[in-house]
Structure formats: structure tokens, C-alpha cells
Length: 301
Picture 1 (cartoon, rainbow, N blue to C red):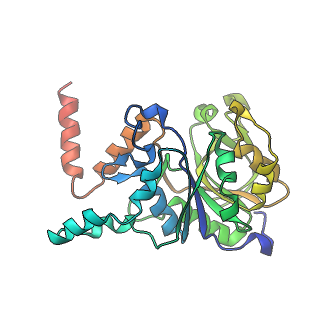
Picture 2: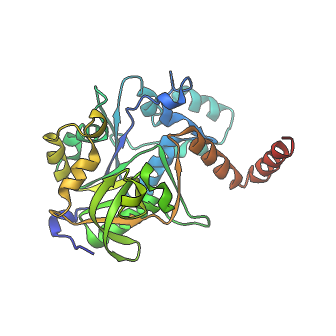
Picture 3: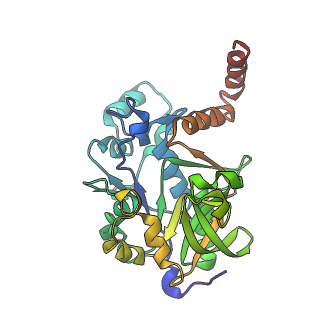
């Protein structure tokens, strides 16, 4: 693996969450409610991502939001009337614990114009400053292995503490599916770490350099902000993060971490339903009932 220099090994304490998207694939549900607040059973998508970041030791949560997204911040604020009422009725308040944040640890910036993921990340440049930082895309629900595995970002931070530099999370998919994703051009591999020699966006199956797809989690050095500053528009007329990362390969260490766990694409309706069913089936308070319900529905067809 490519090793780090001391400047590329500051601890990861900040994470950027790009949450400015309009969620048009989920209309009309997302007309008034941010897609990031759509629940998988009883926990919003954004909560899963924030919990994952906190598990990895990240302290500062940076939301890149857009118009109509203030409810995301409200979710992590004190709900005085709700909490006072629950308290009066002796209701268990622990269910709200993950939604609490230390004052000052949640910061929001606006992306006024939807110019792509790279532009969204660039909007957080003043808060990121000269520190390496994580990026979590809440649409990608990354679930630890059954039986107590660690989350995706925790696995990445552990790897970062070994090699520093830049890291991206990857998953292995059947080779015939690679044309739907960003794919890495792999170099040397050691355990779950693979050197990244290049990034290819949605390659034809016969031209894909590997079956390792980029999966919505990144740890990047602050220099990426300087690259995004002057970067022109790429695919789809948007400023692409992939283009900025590709320019950094060869100038800084760049490795991929193969996530030991599962990914659900909750940006699609099918993936959202799959995640809901999968996580409901695993819950001790409802798994058996959900399994019986699903069986009953299947038998009724």
C-alpha cells in the first residue's frame, strides 16, 4: 500500500453530508419532506449516516443543504414540546438519544444551485479548512455485517490510521453490473486495502478495469477543495467529485477499502423497499412478525 506523509495523517473529525438534492425519484413523498428524512422502519436515512459517522469518531457534522431542507437540522435539535410531553407521561426518552447533538457540532451550509456532488462538497470548504474530512452520501445505506461488525466509516477510519492519504469505500459486484457504477482501476492489494490507480465512471462491461464499485463513502485530503475550485463541469453538466479525485491520484496516496458489510441503494425505490424489509426482518421486536406477514402476502398471490 502507498504510505502516508505526516501532513496526510491528521485525525478525521469532520464529515460532510451532501443533502441538498430534490429527491424527485420519490415524489410526491418528497414534495414537503426531505428524502433524507424518509424512514427505514423508524429511523430516517440521515440518522443512519450520522450514527455511522459518530461510531467512527467524527465530531463535527456538516450538512450541505438546499431550500426546503431545514427539517434535517430540526431532526437533530431539541424538540421541546415533544420532550416535555413525553416526560410528563413518563415515556421512555432514550429513543431520542441518537437525535441529540452537542451544541455547535452540527453546521449547515447552503448549495444555492444544484451543480453536482463536487460543487456540494466545495460549498463546505470554509468549515473543512486545512483538515482531511469524510464524506457520507445518505442515499447509500451501509449496514455492518450481522452479528456485530463495525460500520463502513469506522472501517475506513481504521484503514486511514494505517495508511493516511485519500480513501474511498468500494464493494465487489458481479462483473456484468459494473456499467451502472463508478469503478476503480486497482493496483496492489493487501487485505481489505487496494491501491487506486484510476477511477472510471460507468464503464462498458468489457472495458471495466475491475468489479470494485465506489460506494458513497470517502476520506479526502483538503487539497481536493483546491482542485474543485477551478474545475469545470463534467458529465451531465455538473462539477463531478470523481473528476477531482482522479486528478489527485498519483500526487497523494489513494487507496480503496473493501467494505465488509452490505449496501442498499436507497436513492431508488426498489433499494429503499429492500432496505426496509431487510432491516425489519433482523429486528428482535418485529422480525418474526414481518417474516410471517411477508409469507402471508406471498402465499396470497
